[in-house]
Amino acid sequence: MKIVLASNNKNKLREIREILDPLGFEVLSQSEAGADIEADENGKTFAENAYIKAKAAYDMTGLPVIADDSGLEVDALNGAPGIYSARYAPEGQRKARILEELKDVPDEKRGAAFTCCICYIDPEGTAHYFTGQCRGKIGYENRGTNGFGYDPIFMYGEKSFAEISAEEKNSVSHRAKALEQLKKFFKNSN
View (cartoon, rainbow, N blue to C red):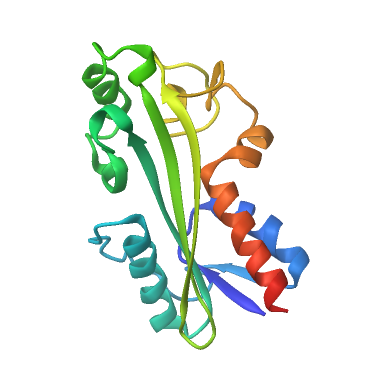
């Protein structure tokens, strides 16, 4: 069965193919499926934004679609940046903004989570949701060179997400946990 990933992100595409190929799915990027669109992510939750992206690709292709929305939620910032993670500050300034906002926050109050919500729209057009979360805390400086986004300031144990291997991150990350739920859903649906 063909399924569209409502993204052209090569890393997401590789990760989702690795999980779904063994289950008999042919995963297409949205451009491979002929749905080169940028959906307006104006939802108020990760689930709403994932649905907006999935529905736009589903309407254009008529094929089942997977879309995700994710972000960093910092406890001391009342869950910010949350759904605005990619727009929290200009490119290259997002991590610095969070570190500055937390400069006087003690270690025990620096809790944070990466959250991911996947929306799967099935062949009949019904939406299904799968959410994963990885808890950690915000460090005091950028650490590590792996990963992307907020990874260098997100501490998972004694290391930042940018200091652990891709394999380790992909086994504990918010996206990995949401994808694992999606995989179970597909296995139970067959």
